[in-house]
Image: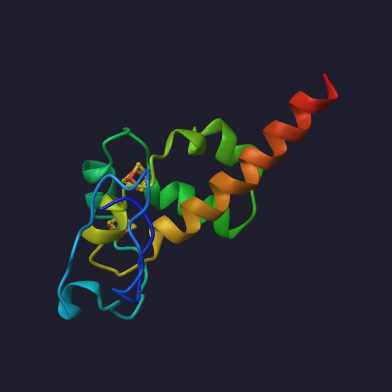
Length: 113
Ligand code: SF4
Ligand code: SF4
């Protein structure tokens, strides 16, 4: 389920598109976000062995140093964490934001070398 959500089926398929996942309306509907219940389902679901609940929390607080230390750049943006979260926390959205910020910091750090 990696990739971006499309709202229009008339979008063209381009080179680099490896697949299309079609979900029903009820599957894509976002539930109301509630507090983390510490069930660890997101940790269990993460194929990269990350702690999505923690990365999301850190990203929300803009703790980019901690995000880098917790290996946020290893996230493959599969969305498994968000899909399994019973609290409907938009984990992937937060992790994506954090990953982009950390990658930007790493790029500018490397450019100075
Ligand atoms: S989106 Fe990232 S953090 Fe979430 S399960 Fe996939 S690899 Fe792990
Ligand atoms: S799956 Fe959701 S509720 Fe459970 S620990 Fe992860 S963030 Fe918290």
